[in-house]
Length: 210
Image 1 (cartoon, rainbow, N blue to C red):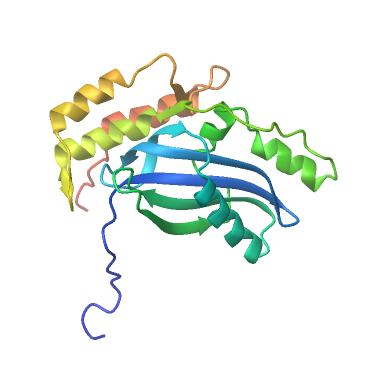
Image 2 (cartoon, rainbow, N blue to C red; image 1 turned 180 degrees about the horizontal axis):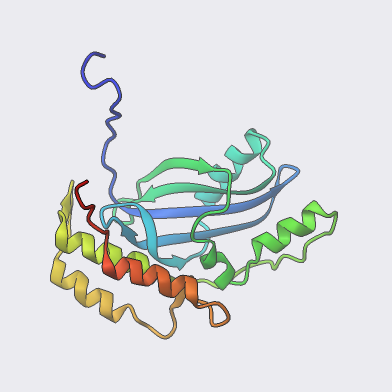
């Protein structure tokens, strides 16, 4: 207890980040959604910068919904996992009682969760589609720029994962695919995304000594 009492040590877990989102009402899941983080910031594990929607895994869905039902959760929530596709191992990371930062991924697949939740709050039965599009990719370009910067200027190795800087640079370019949705770009309001990208390209500003 006397050794670094304010430090938490945690085992490094590999695999992919997996997000399971659900809109709960009265103990039932009105809608569920799942995406996989194909690229993260930092590269060794963190927030998603390239995401792909996929079919909800029945075991993951059952576990997540059971947790939310047991705590009596109503409204939107996301449950995060790490998943190793090679071994099938699955680790529960956390339960977040809020919208996830990459909500764009669900909306790009045809699920407008804020609208559904507004309807529920106003006593209106939402018209939620029975399913959603699978294989839809969403990319946070500013985050991908920061990820690549981190690989070139920091460590590209952590635990059992190692990244080739040149291979990741080529991947950064090839990920500019017309079929991939760019977040948070909007033709009607492009300034926020442009400003965010500028900050990512410029990098963190150095403090001048007082």
